[in-house]
Every structure is written in C-alpha cells, then in structure tokens.
Image 1 (cartoon, helix red, strand yellow):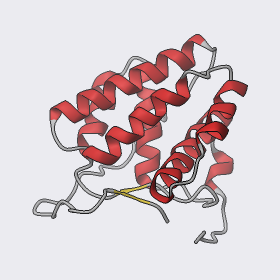
Image 2 (spheres, helix red, strand yellow):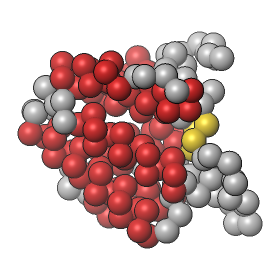
Image 3 (cartoon, rainbow, N blue to C red):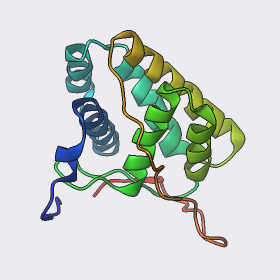
Length: 166
C-alpha cells in the first residue's frame, strides 16, 4: 500500500535518479510478486540511451537482495518517499561514477554481508556507471553521504528474503 506524505521526495530527484529508483522498485516488486517488468524497465533505459544498464541494474539489485545483512527497504513504485536504503543505493551508483569507489564500497559494506558480496555489488555498480557515462548520463553525488545504515551491534540478521516492499 502506498503512503501519503506532504512532500514528494521523488520530485526532488533528477530524471536519471528517478529512473534508477523506479527501476529498482519495479524490479523488486516484479521479482517478489512474479510480475514481468523487465520489458518496461528495458524500454526506460533505451529511452535514456543506456539500454545495457538494465541488465546490470538487475544484477546489482539481485546481489543486494540476496547478500543483505538485514532487510533492505525498497518501496513501492508509487511511494513518494525515498527510503534511506534507496538513497544509499543511489549514492553508491553516483559515487562510483564520480571516481569515489572507497566511499561507495563503504556504503555497500553497510548493506551486504561479507567482502565478496560488497565487491560483487561494487563491480555491478562500476558496470552501470560506465554504461551511463558512455551514454552521456551522469548522476550527481550528494555533498553529504547517506546516513549510516549499518545494523546496531547485536542486531539479528533476518532469515527471510531481505528485500522488503512497502
């Protein structure tokens, strides 16, 4: 169910960030509910001039979802709010594209379990960034990084599928 808030945070996002956010949300919903969404996502990236980015984004989100240290909040496509986790994922992509891989990997390490998972997600982020750069599409890194999204010490790691959809 979609929430109602006074301010649409998505409206503040540039077009590319909005497209990435919508795609991450749609792919997650499609995967969890068995809805075929790939064609619409691929059409969106084709319109952006970066059709190859769609497949790389699927891999990026798959790694996050299957290697998450805890539930990662990826909201419904109609939700006007941008979750801290979604903002973190967008920050990872922007930092990677702007040659700040250590910061991006630090954010990834706060989301996934293990160095191998963080490295795999970082590799996917590099591929997405290279495709976007080659197509003339650029993300804007925020001056302040996403909040620290690491679990509190002693927090339990969920045993269920880690990505949640609201």
